[in-house]
Image (cartoon, rainbow, N blue to C red; front, side, top):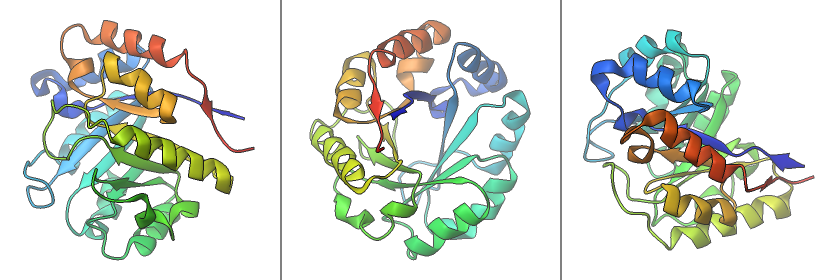
Length: 227
């Protein structure tokens, strides 16, 4: 069986003066996901946006809202993010005190659930929740700022996770976020990632052309899943 490779433009890099138009442009160009980074200034240094922004763009598109919570105590806000239009919610293993419980709660709401790992967090942090996940997000930079360079050591981490998922027979998406561009895209796809977040590589310059170029690269790779 083959998984689908998916491009997830990160609206953190979009022009917020015309956010609705930005969303419309990248989705019409072929992006099926929108990656939405929520930062609280505590778990990560930056502050981004929250429920009102997500609610405001939800009517603009029927694409998947891939909400990435870089916040402390994410369990307090799951219901609110579900209510404003999230299709998938990813929490950080480092910030979720009761990770198994929050994974269960997200799935109970009928949403896809992911767990994110910072670059220095080992894969063993997922040992007791991995079978319940739809997706694992491997941070390929340290979270908090856009425009950082890809950390090369994360390629091995992606490869190890894909190998583990295949060994366990898991139907798992592996998402990567940070430093993804035309140069690093092939490396992460070859290693086993199949959901690729891109910010400045999409929203810098001609948005539609950038999306189409990245999708063309992604089309050359097959994302494998367990039988």
